Length: 222
Image 1 (cartoon, rainbow, N blue to C red):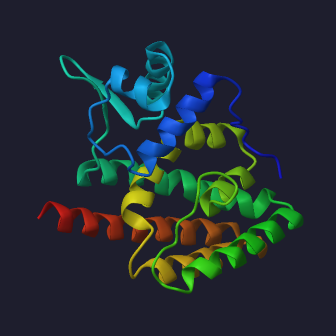
Image 2 (cartoon, rainbow, N blue to C red; image 1 turned 60 degrees about the vertical axis):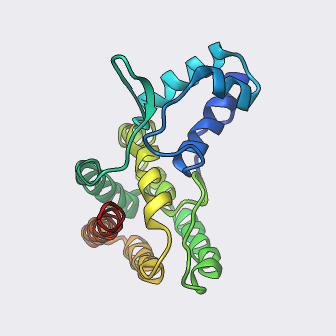
């Protein structure tokens, strides 16, 4: 399978990837103010490197700048979730449809093997954590679409903001085993080359995920 390469080359790259991971996973809290001075000390790099990383994180939509406030990690909100997941449902539904058409038999076998490996985590029923990249089910299907414009829109656009919601609010609790079963059905539709069913199942899966996260947000805010 062709990978969507993001191998860090420079110190600036490494800092950007580490900061992005720490924001996505909540090590740096949603809504937190980003201080160049503090971050340069924490990550052992210059303020210029941190400034560049923050600019890149802004383009990933996980950092925002406000006048007289500076850079902050985006807050996770119900309004933001609904707007984001409307786009996600449409784009990833299309990705699943194209994956059913374009993935090779070998790539589908790799996707099925990935799900089998996930089962070891899911069978405990507590967490369904997936790292970014090749071990992320959704990442594999997006790549499997073989449409470079769609891949860029997702990976360079909303992928990491989606992961903030998924990792911090959607990868644990009673929905874990249900989400895994939904993944299995999506893979089966792709393996059967049923483009319409693959898209429908992916869109439904994302709707269920959105509702689950929305409920968690409501319980946190109430």
